[in-house]
Length: 566
Image 1 (cartoon, rainbow, N blue to C red):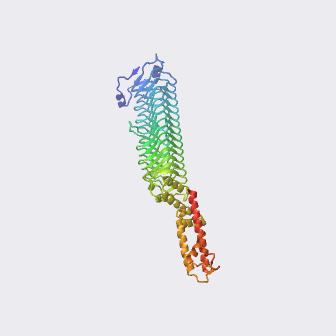
Image 2 (image 1 turned 90 degrees about the vertical axis):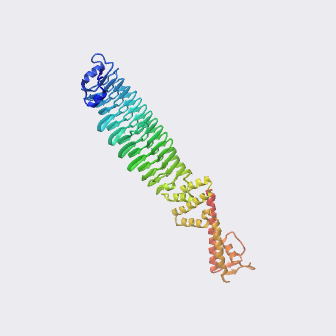
Image 3 (image 1 turned 45 degrees about the horizontal axis):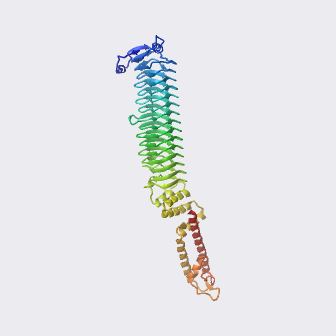
């Protein structure tokens, strides 16, 4: 049965009014065999259907084909088995199709309804709602929980939903497409696809062949979603201020996550404990977390690189605490001036490339570990934490002078910590740069002085002045020579009552040789056992002896430090 074959499709759309009225009961009888035999072919175009079309539980052998029709009451296809359903351009109060079983469902090209229910439906081919409009503000507009689609589920190319799109637990064999869609459910999740399973890709933005983008006024929930290839958010715009822009904790993407080419999100992007088999590209994008978090990816696993780069602008904190990135974490040419905190604590990555155009206010690298640190030292924020941050080498082009690296270590937020210095020393030592090793080692001891009590500060200062912390033991010789000169001069001007012979015959007295023997503990010239100092000369003897022993102790301590360190 075919009704309206002679009416051009454009004519019914242009007029805005159906050209005939058909009873829903008559249509049911024709389709199910209640009136004569079931129709072998059914197509109805540009008609008004009066009454409620209810095909609950029916099993039809002929496809349902309504085009540009208007229904007075909801259409009920609950539990219906039918080869295919075509509702292109139709207007109806609602579509109730729970547990529908069919090959294809096409409700595109101007389809308009308050709401659609497709929960637990089984569609072996594709479901198309392109250029459809659903209007159920504040409630659920599209209810597709546990929907099973063998090929494509497309709600794009002008699809508009005022109300929530609910795809919790849905399964899509190929792609879930929202390219060119607008979802409007402010303050809530505009799209709830928790636990969705997609065999190829999810498009929440443009594709290579379709540049229409995507808009959601409300958040996107993809918790525990499984995507076999990639998630693309090119030119996607998601706005849920004060809430989640994207909640995707535990999401698993086998290949790539693309948030770039004009992507913007207002609200928090939560990727905690998610797994991305390939790369995560976040570039030429705008993230606005307000006063809260813009991006959190704690314990995320990324099988390739994570790129927060190429003119991305971030407002709000970013945390990658305990994230595992198999290849590189790139923070290059990113505007992080609106980021109060960049948390990379416990991060694991092959390399960290850090050269943002504007640094964050604070950066946390506690207990993080990378093989290569490739950074622009001028791009570091004013405050950062390097406690137990480890790296095996410095990348090419990111290796300023040792003095610049020392300044970098001294600005560490926690003040003096031994590990950051030891880490840099180890890197220079593996490189064979002993001069840099000495400079950083000396700087470490100087910085350590700030964390000591008064006695420790005094001893630390003595080691620096006397022997350069063991790296300049020759300084002790200069100090000993100075002691000998001063002592020798003092002994040379002493009168006869202050230097007296205590044994006869006594060798000739030489004031400088006497000062040397008094100052150097291991030196024995026979003068001290033959001549004794009295009065002020005795004080000089005591001072020279004490100074000599202090310098000797400093030399031994400095050498011991070097031996222990090596």
